[in-house]
Length: 269
Ligand SMILES: Nc1ncnc2c1ncn2[C@@H]1O[C@H](COP(=O)(O)OP(=O)(O)OP(=O)(O)O)[C@@H](O)[C@H]1O
Ligand SMILES: [Mg+2]
Image 1: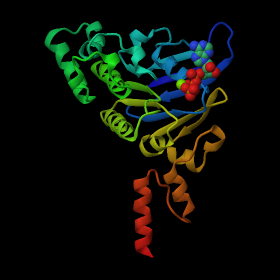
Image 2 (image 1 turned 90 degrees about the horizontal axis):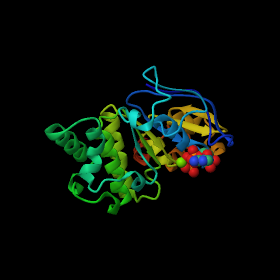
Image 3 (image 1 turned 30 degrees about the vertical axis):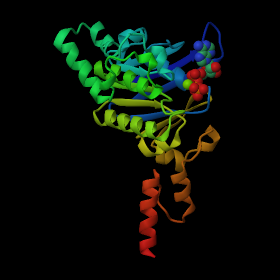
Image 4 (image 1 turned 135 degrees about the vertical axis):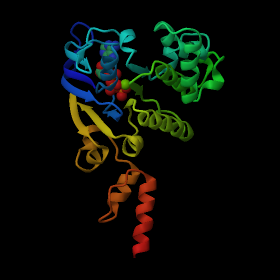
């Protein structure tokens, strides 16, 4: 369990308040979306979880242990991070060295190092780039390299900050499949996103940040049926809107569910 306990935060000495008394926990194997308007503090929350920022007040707990003062390098033993612009986190001259950097720092060498790096690159589907220079690759490939780096550390939590924004449909599908695969392997996936199709279709839980606080925390179905997504600047996915337009229709988390429901309704007529 990874927890922000009564966390408040502002940048700099006396910058404007970003977060106030936030209580937020992430359990093992969840696929959680963190969403909200631009500037609401989503990236800040992930920077507090990974140790890139320290809370102004409150604590960060990992399995009950206080890790508030641990920096990002120390926390990399349990949490990995895929930046909004992943080229900013690539600094080695080959993909193999990039993925191997963390386990090397942990003291792995020789066959043991080869094994974790090779396995992580295969899982993230970047094995063919082993000798390539990371910064020349596409953003989607760089994201998968950053994921491979986290997998090579046997991470328990992984944060992805808006990985699908600006990506085409094929790249989105590949990334969604990889995130789902990590979740199925027991890794907690924390996804910062504005993409409500992914929230409804893939995530087990959604957290909305608004007015410096957690405005909503629950399953996606609840957000789109009982929450106030529009008030928080979130659009309802097309499948949910279409489902709602048919009287008595159930909640449709994606277009496949809507089509299936529609087919059954027609058959029953
Ligand atoms: N390094 C910084 N120094 C000062 N203020 C910052 C810094 N980084 C972010 N902020 C401010 O903190 C607030 C929250 O920013 P944050 O990046 O966490 O929001 P976000 O929800 O991730 O937004 P977006 O959807 O645009 O990515 C914003 O008002 C932003 O301008
Ligand atoms: Mg952000």
